[in-house]
Image (tube, rainbow, N blue to C red):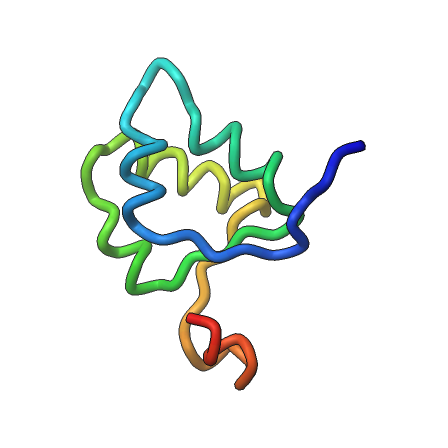
Length: 83
């Protein structure tokens, strides 16, 4: 039985560590398998500048609709309490 998280938010460390390879696209392959919807805060997205492969993978995930870049105004009160 495959269990998937309904929605998760990722931080810069996860993106940098999983996205550091140009050969193995771990970030791009793993996030869609873990969660139906993945979000990243705009501020966090802006922190992921290097490695370039991590930023490239984030952009690819955004393009295909897997990843959504959000800001605090788009979060509910309950969601703000969990960050």
